[in-house]
Image (cartoon, rainbow, N blue to C red):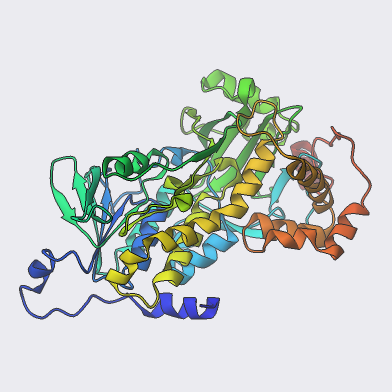
Amino acid sequence: MDDDATDNHLRTTGTHAAPHAGPHAEDQAEDRAGDHAVVLGAGMAGLLAARVLAMRFSRVTVIERDELSQEETVFRPGIPQSRHTHVLWARGVELIERMLPGTTGKLLAAGAALVESPRDFLWLSPADWFGPVPGARVLLASRELLDRTVRTEVLRNPRVRIRGGATVAGLVAGADGRTVSGVRLRDGEQLAARLVVDATGRTSKAPAWLTDIGHPAPAVTRYDSRLGYSSRYFEMPDDPARSWQGVYVQGRPDLPRGGVLMPLDGNRWLVTLVGNGEHAPPVREEEFLPFARSLRSPALYDAIRDAVPLSAPTAFRNTANEWRHYERLERWPAGFVVLGDAACRFNPVYGHGMTVAALAAEALAKEIRTLGPEQIAAASRRIQRRTTAVVAVPWQIATSEDMRYAVTEGPPADRATRILQRYMARVMAGANTDPAIAARFFGVLSLTRPPGILLDPVTMVRVLSKPRLPDTPEATAYPPHHGPPAERGARRSA
């Protein structure tokens, strides 16, 4: 199915409830598993999967352990990383808008920002500052706002409902032992379903659930660069002379610490400091600013040193890349699929999680577009493989970059990876100033364009024609196109 056909299918199907035969039809439907799908987890992967499944199932129930509020935009424990920086890359924005038309506009009206990266940022790469080169759009918003807005739009479809405050204890196996026929909740209740989708994220218990019903657990590939986060909110200062939307100072192997500042709804800044291994950022308030001052550029520190803090720092350390290879299992139960971080999770510093969730939902839509509920259940193994295939590129990006750091735990880089790392370092350096390289680099980073575009002859010649940088290039405190605060103030006074 081509992209245009997928777009049309997503826009025109599953947007109305199935017709009711009479006043008791809904009660009768509760007793049938055949037209019922259950999605575990109401994060981005689960919500988008529910939206897609409503095209083919008359009922989709989302089970979420957190109590959910549609009236307030609040933190919830099920998304622990929501107090740290999130970006939704261009491809994710595009796909979510296709599935849920109007969502982008509602987010922007609520205070989200759609900006151009790196043009709207002060961005110091491992090589040097990015100039005002073309890149990719990113949507910046609090994860709480993203979560509530997408959930509201998904629930406009009357086929979808969410049960908050419910915890799944395991899968229910079919009589033949080769299928999943529902889930068992912690209170003992069982929900019958033709299809069960696990989108419970990093805490997924799917390996144990599979072994409980007689199926093998998957092999796991794991890379952990021991990256730590420390984040806090600030009131956004009023500065008419400020010409940037955010700041990103990247670390590199010789100084593995960095930081990012981005605008959020509510006239706030969210600042996340990052560091690998012993460079993990502090959580104590009195140490937050000194760490920011220790980065490769003072730009982030200068931005926040006089800003009013709105919260204490919050830590996050669960940042390993982990791929549970369900797609490799020879035995797979019909009626079960694992999506999102529950199948493959990435170091969140690359910002790919939500976009990959949207790509998986798109792949799911393509696979089920002509199938009935029973056929979808029977095709679960193929669906698992097709939806997992979308993680290959972001996995390569995250793990090859993490392997640059000596503290990273995981399989060693092979010769091909080391060659690719050296080449990509030159791509990054070229992208700092060359618009053509930058457009291709950010097309790949935003998951909008295939990585092969960086290896075509025209791009390779352009990249390799650039002067080779030293291993630890020096950079100015600020980019040439944007001086420090004192200079901006002097220009304003003049």
